[in-house]
Image (cartoon, rainbow over all chains, first blue to last red; front, side):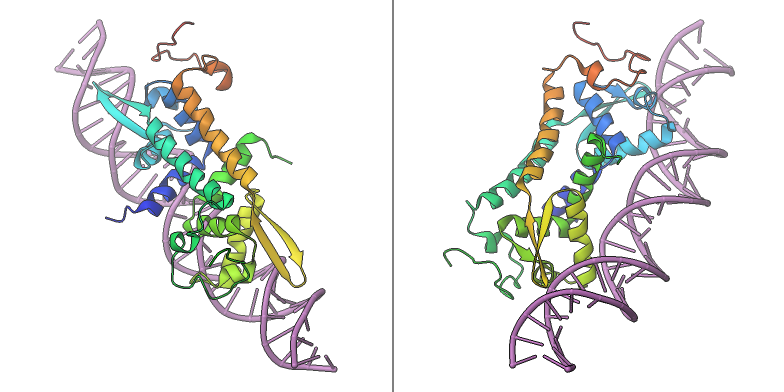
Length: 121
Length: 121
DNA sequence: ACAACATACAACTGATTGGTTGTACGTTGG
DNA sequence: CCAACGTACAACCAATCAGTTGTATGTTGT
């Protein structure tokens, strides 16, 4: 399995990088909707909307449950919070409260240039 | 210019949807780095890294200032917070604290189906 | 039973993306 | 002065993406 944290982040941000998908996410966060009910709101084919839902689902931002012939989608607020957490990490780096930056960014080549005045070691 | 809120959101999330760009953003949030200093950290050409920085810059997540022959990039924490705010909106929708959802999602076709039991009108 | 509906998925297309190489131009150090 | 450096940008390529149409499969209401 390839699913490390970076893959998850890729999936999250990619899923959110489309306005139709963001709109779908808003609707399903507000309440359950079948895929075809969602599709009626957009000027595109049912198949296109279905694919958007699939992208959101693969990212974990949406889950589906089957009810009869319908597939009801709902937004996963926990996943939204995970994305918020990723951004909070960035903000923490900016705040400089983490001076273990070298550990976090560890890739073995960190010390090739020191244009950055690494405060305290 | 076409830059409405959705365009900005597209740019934000697209910029964040690549691990190299996220890594660059982490570095420049921690401190200023020239483009070539950044490029040394990645197994790709200088031009590729330059393009990644350009994507981050167009999204407003990074700004550059020229110093001599170098271009120093720094992370814009305000933009990171803007993204957080977008996610907070989603969370608010989920919380149901906004019952003007129809206004927020206003597109004229909202009432085609009411599979959603819109609580209190 | 069966027509209409909801979904799933494959195949195709044009546009965008992430990478490359090559070229050009300003800046700097010796 | 001029060679090396840092940047910018164009042209190209393979892969992915967002959309389409078409087909297949299960579900429902009458």
